[in-house]
Image (cartoon, rainbow, N blue to C red; front, side):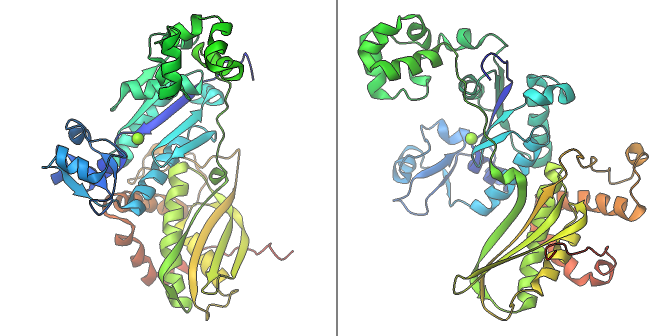
Length: 415
Ligand SMILES: [Mg+2]
């Protein structure tokens, strides 16, 4: 790939866990919020920008944070909520490229080189992603755009919070030059001190030194690598994770579940979650997989291939429910999961329709029922985002009548 100009985006949600708490409880907005371990022995997982003004930082002992910021609001983390929002945000990212490399729940690299023809240049894509994330989740995400990963990540950090920082094509070395050499990956305190002794304080200083001088201080291998980075040469690719090839989730139950009814209820919630993630990422898949782990840790998976790809909660639920008949539901179950895979690569799902119909659907050949379902999904997804999935999903349990009319699928897994 050397020589080919890439467009890399780095995206990082601002003070993610703390922002989610402020999003869900408006009374916390504008206040110093610190998410951390439950006891004074814990550490800070996230601090809102209000708390950072008191010097509170991630990974600091909670006891220290309490001393620095006695009026802070200290909260336990709610990882399932953060995970659900993270899924939604990554769904937005994957609308623009399948080359999405998550670094954590709140941080990712995207390679949008091949997306430019369709979606515009890097800065335009970053701006659209930032707007969609804000509109659809209420969260702010900072972005950096550059030809290489290193510069994109540093650009994001410089623009935080709620920033978009662009390193122009050909401008990576000039962008890096004035920055402290400690910003380079792999330069910690010891290396920084060694570099300082040979007169290097900025990245530009390092780039200008002859390699022999750097080698003398750091050894030949490290010198070559760091000098290349300092000159903006960072060949690392964006490595998409496997999760992009399937959308699913599994749940370990607090108490083992026994019997089809209890399992069906769990599958219904999971199907709703999977459907929402598929629609957020504008993906539809043909393969529905049910995974079940029994209390004795033996595990079975069952799968079917549908006639047509889907992102429909109820079809996913009905399919998974059908698969339940093929396992021993009478045994205690400790974990169950539903996954949809087998995406149509070329055929991106059409954009979701406006709830009130609109000319957008005029050209679609979908039957009226499918259109109605899409509109319904759009509305339910908004409700679930706002009030939590459990407010909407259980109502479907009583809706068997309509569910029975969903199309029949054929089983291909035994062929
Ligand atoms: Mg972050």
